[in-house]
Length: 416
Picture 1 (cartoon, rainbow, N blue to C red):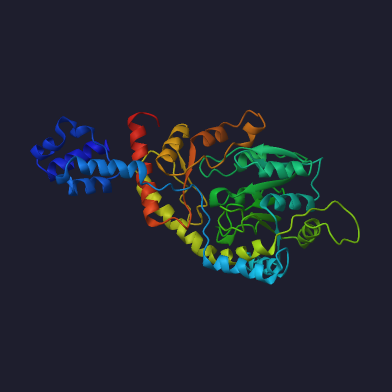
Picture 2: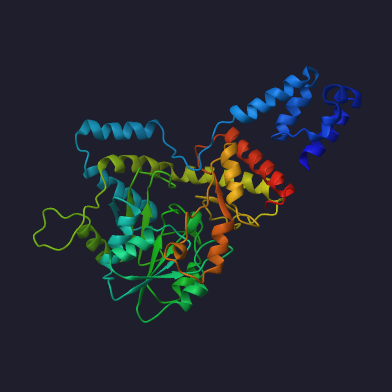
């Protein structure tokens, strides 16, 4: 155990007599939050029990809580939004058009359409593709309920697919087994910033809608995700890779789809009536998005740097770490435990590191469906720890220290 190793080092650093004078027979019961705290203690050992009291106080009171997610915002974003306020044009306007153009250029496509959310984006794409009550749409079970909602908005039947245990993305072989004559589309999320196995999925000859809500800026075979399917949707929610607070974007390989989406996203000033929606983005949001888009490459570099630190420290542990893929952008750093992660999550949160199951509840559970053993195991054992560009170096170190110490503590108690 780590605290026993510390005691051996302590014995070499100070005489047994000196340590016994300070602690007597209690020496093997001392535990430290991390090795840096131990070094600090040895350095100040001459102060006796005072040094240990200081460490205890630091642990309980002075560890600043690190949230699981946090947007990365700065002065540029504040100035951009402030300019929109000064202009008096705060609803959809020229800034939205500018943002759409910049995003399309970034993705290397002809056109992009900004909307109010990622869910709205998927809803509009399904409508533009003519999908309705007679149709089936395949989606993964291991994903947030936004996909399920959008499919049900258009009256189609959602068909849930199993999870690839190595990547957490949808399993192409299971997708193939679920295709029927009624299947009109497969919605393919690139979960946690890692591309799904598009090579296999695209060969199924069913229209693919890429869900890039967690993967904006990621690539597959060095080509931007979102450019492989018939259409792609993006989310700019507050804690996504880049943010507009709330918001989304649509790109498509078919100009007919983008034209349909543009018509459906707003209901006013139309010559003929059809059911349309109020799914517009505001200039407020677009101003934020323009700046975030210019910072996207740096955001991804920061995420990858933090991920490398996590991998370096966690590799010796009996964990399933994210797939080693150079094109991964690490929207989430997801760790697979050997058993249910609930107790581990509670312990980390209590100490001061926000973490969570990366999918709140898989869809098969929400729909009371059986027969998804891989997804079930994945949901129980996978947890996500903080990873975002605004994490400071000391926060990353705190996350590593707390994670490793908690892991060792629970391993000793056979809780993991």
